[in-house]
Image (cartoon, rainbow, N blue to C red; front, side):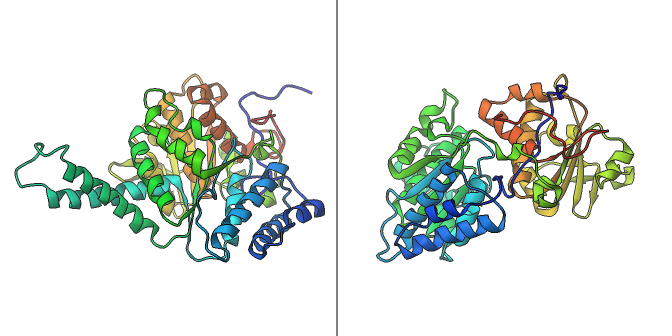
Length: 420
């Protein structure tokens, strides 16, 4: 067999973050062996969902289901026990089924007092809410005309701390179970806010469930700032059940029938398609009059097309300009189909461009938005510009897209998967 192009990536397998097929009766019975009614109900609901979706949980995924069900049964069941020690931190490489398990678990929770949110979205809201609350609190303790002279005063520190706690409380309200998708910390400023958030959650009767691509010790991995995250890592290890999901297989790297594709996975990763080939994919080249300037946050971004749900960007406008994750989050609210063209090969790719592309793809994947990525050439070597885990996550996201190379079947596997 001839060697495939090294830049290509397998297409994704299994629905909703990837699982293999055919849930077995043996596995179903092994998940329901408990006398606790709520525990059994939760596990049965997840098993039934897997059966309907033709999914097959591996051993680590089964253990995660048992852990989640046992812990939430203790928290929500008779007696209303404290969640101390019952929090769960699910982590593992991309494509191991973390998102599917969390979604099935969340939907089965028998309480209305629950919230599931992507960590990007939660922290964006927390920053905004905390900033407003802090400004109000400081205005109440500062004297007019004393700008700068009062910094470091204990009443200012207390006011700032109280404002942040009020912001967190206003966002969580009467939540009993809080689920975070894609928990991480790469920014030293976020580390301090994260520590306060953790302290607040652990001090309230809130059960915390998180998924992450990172083990706790790899949060804020930059050695210069890592000390800032150590209190949070210690809290995770002391108060959360840390469970790794890794069957040594990225389920997105397996073949997926086109009829089973949903959301992000309905898009295509296409190598230099012609106009006729684009029409085969259900898209057409944008006309000059379709271009527009969009301003999702503080500055404008040029789009080659804005038409209904579809927005089309040139890579340079979206990823080489000063755009941010906040821009992508705002644009994702209005556009459910993105096309990004002109993605360069490795020789022309820049670290900043690749980082912004990875951030945009994270947002689109997490929000189930179709992406057609039109690339000019091999950019596999560019992945070395990212930290290892970030590169693995990007590669796994791309695995979810349907590969298209002129002259080849769209579903034909063309290269090795992420963890093959």
